[in-house]
Length: 229
Length: 300
Image 1: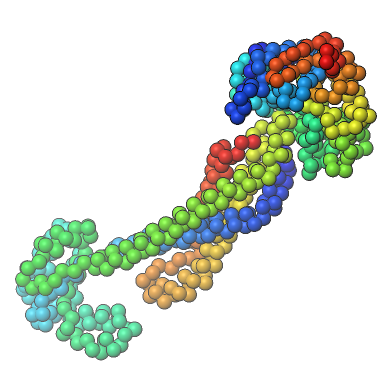
Image 2: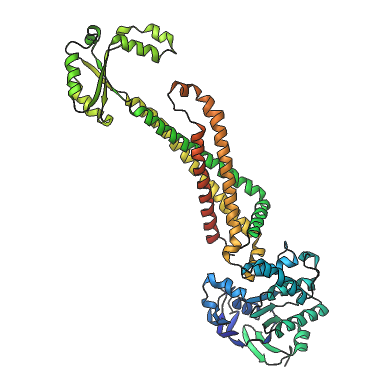
């Protein structure tokens, strides 16, 4: 589902490559943690998958798309098949909860009656039924993240990328969010989550890929955060 | 694509930079007003050329001797001159005007200036052969041909005066177009700037839309339409000002020469003819400017 082969990414302004000869393969339906300290290349990793950046060298593949070689006009098509969730939620502030979720469907040209049917279903899935008409600013952090997850999941993406989705949340709320991501993973969606939340990684016992200074230093089938340190 | 989405984005965008929007609309409308004014002058020139073209004649002024003694061009050298002109292949028609008739026409032309008429004696005006050339452009050759023939005093092209009038109007038109062009450049830069500003203030939102998989076209169409809407409002304003300008300025200041037939009348139909051109120009220019700006400067 996701394949990186000998990927190197050098930013013009930096002396050290953000990613250096990284090769990782993630199969369909997997749940993978991407861990490592700040500056280890986690965000770059995700940016390459979303084609927010292109690698300096190497191959990036998402669901059979050669991402690096994808022409610009095809990029939206790729992003419509990838859901993404961020630490800062990235909701459209001038739209209601339902509109935010609906937007992801409008963008791909889904007919109105489908949107009307699907949006409440997804909001129910993330536990936000009854908050459809609230504005993002009226919600708690955990609720906002649920909206973001609903939006990422609403058109059944092949892959869900989460960049520190619990970074702004308290442990209990984080736990709820993780349960939600797990539930989404069980529907067959591949989930790739960048984090440095020890307790979450340790409690989930899923595959862990660790980056340090742009290199993969560990890839455990069932890992914990702090092994060997 | 949702029309309502695009529409609401355009309205918010225009309201967000209200000062810039107003500046953009005003510069656009002034530029279009000047363009419209220039186009009206062009129409006026066309009408005048139509009107005067068939009237342009060559005056062959006859010597004092002929003028004083030949009432109906019955004697030589006048009679010989007339018959030679009548057989000339370049000449369309010849009409003789004796001293009295010349004086009558003079009185009519200067009826607004009775002192001048009183001071002028009929004897001071020459008898004239009015010649119409088949091709007015050939005046120079014609003049050379006639110069020095017996009885001929001077050959004058009435077209020369019109040429001066036309060159004045042409100069006016060019001046107006030049200012319109400068103003259009200012409008263009303002449109470009406003779009960049709009795109900048909404970069977070647009970034999110792009992440969700919105196409460039989807996210940028509102910015483009913002420019076009402003351009259209500017055009409507310009058309309104043009109508106002016509009835308040042209109809009052030029009332006398228009009645006297020196200037052709510019009707509402002429302004109406120019209006769609302005609207079209505004739409095309703002759309192209918007598109180019988004392509070159806005990386979202």
